[in-house]
Length: 524
Image (cartoon, rainbow, N blue to C red):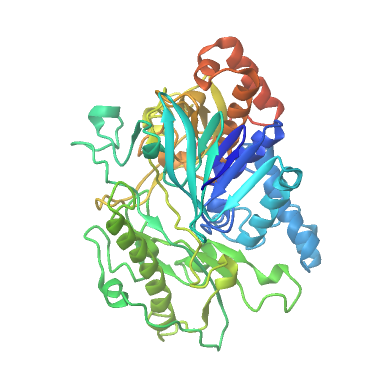
């Protein structure tokens, strides 16, 4: 017989948005159950091994108070537990890895520890239950409401039935939506549907999705040989070249996303080429006492291991498994190529001193616990954010659309990676934007909310709503919304469409440190 657990709010998925939702709902005094497929909560920040992608003003403004607490907690963790150099310890804006992609590139075990610390009071009190290694298997509905969800323990095969007044879908691919019969869209919309300048000119393509990446971490130990076994698909990937790519994927040639010009990379800084090792470097050993780290470490989420040969949802299980394995093989093949064949500035080939850091990602195969999916199923929402609302070229006044129902803010370029239909990068300037409450409300379902990339955006606008601080804000606002609705006995739809309720909810968000509008800034 299945176990049965009940809470005020059930959150399916413990990624970045799910964790933020759990924290918000628990802070409101609600009982919460959160499930997570992997061993680690945190999603992009931990199990997917992606250092935070953030906007230029993140140190001053442009994120929620709890996300800032997370960032501050990361720095405090290093100060409290690591032998930092005096210079690093005195640096209020310490970037542990000195990576170029973020002002706070750090190890994923650190993020995991900090997130668990933030949730600890609610876990220890019994208010929050976290079920790791559990994936959703089915959902039961009654009309326009989700009644229950069954989650499967991936280790034991046992099942738990979860019930609650409110459910939040915080899975990486919007897995609750089809199981609950919620209306949703996938892939690329057409211009006829959305009017977006960069949408498809012809028919919509539901299976045209951004490529995903199975990330891994590595460091470099000069003079040592850490070459891995030759991957099973190495011959395929060694020779693979997409029609739209300037050279073989496993090469130093790539593309500048916003201009599509060919660009040349290098591994380590030293020439005028772009250093990929520095790009997402997560350990800079110069910040630590001598001997703490044998070498600098980096996270490999590069153009060379973006996988775009096919989608992994809305397809058969066989097709899904093929592409998941293909992405793993691509990443391992990239590492093997780097270790054995990559051209070096000194005329030699390969860097055998590159060492796969299994411990950093917490797995036996050395790859992240979970793939980094840039795109999800997306709810059909009361309001859908379009390119026209946020793209710089579409906004002559230099300001993104103002949403009176704002529940947060974000900023990032509209950044779409090559897609499963072999469409090239779409990388265009956008303006600091708001997150409208209408994008969190399904057109029909009354007690189901999105908490990450599955909100009411398009294939195009997903490109700027999918990054770490924005996903955190989406999840946090969903958590507060569910808690608010439980407390007041109202629906999310009523909150948005009843002016006094909307004002009261927005006041709650403001008190809790959720910024609802931007100060005067500039586009990125």
